[in-house]
Image (cartoon, rainbow, N blue to C red; front, side):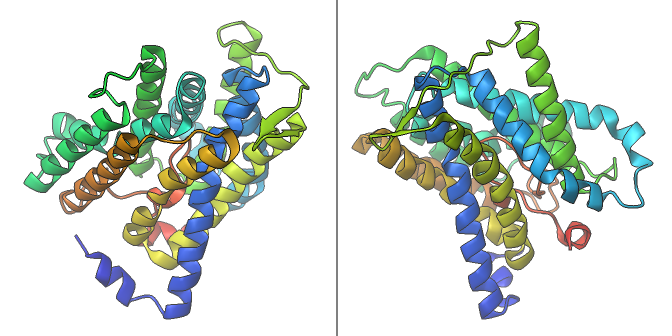
Length: 343
């Protein structure tokens, strides 16, 4: 695996600086989604309504870029329709709905940190499904992340944690792991932007249909949302969710990936967790306990070690843009051949 220093050396200073700035904006934008969603939930929105609005707005914003990426390749759509639908149902709708439900039962930072254990789940899947035995470094990183998870849940001190919230957060983790695996597949030939736009569109349609037939509770209000102690119109939160925490985050993430390369960008993308904790503190007044802060640091350290220990050429570790849910696209960048499609 190429080291981070190798990624840095090939980047001119100005390109590296702009890439880091764009990656930070993208991670911060994604980190804002949880606090905004919880504000809507507290105002009377259901998770299904909030996530559907976010997904459909993002799909509308990304529709044109996705269509442009498909120029000359529309013949791929019929044979890739199953992939797009599955991507939308699990990696988009399932992951985000589970995450939004989780923040209704627990602090945003805790839910996000549980979801961010998904790279460890991917390593386990690749071992069981594809016989890619993890390295010692990978196992050690997974153990560190597991210890961090115990601290984040504050199980040692006996603090009460809602088991329903934990289950929803684990569901978001599973959905995020599915997106990692599906995003690594290149056999369908779909450009990453097209897969993202199509997945968001189908995910939004699936969520809307589920709400209409009563499978997913679907309710929205026009009540103001309380953020940072101030009363904010509901449509401001919805617009921010769709445009900033989804569309803007993807655009900045893709631009950052072009400048930084997949490996360095993926590490910068882990700052989304820290952004979410900061926004939850500023907007919701959720101050994490010291043990949770330490646990969060251990989870981030464990995930970094796991990524460093990935076997060379492992497709699960090679990210792609078009990521969805709580995980930033800078944490799953396209490889060089795919970056040509974006450029």
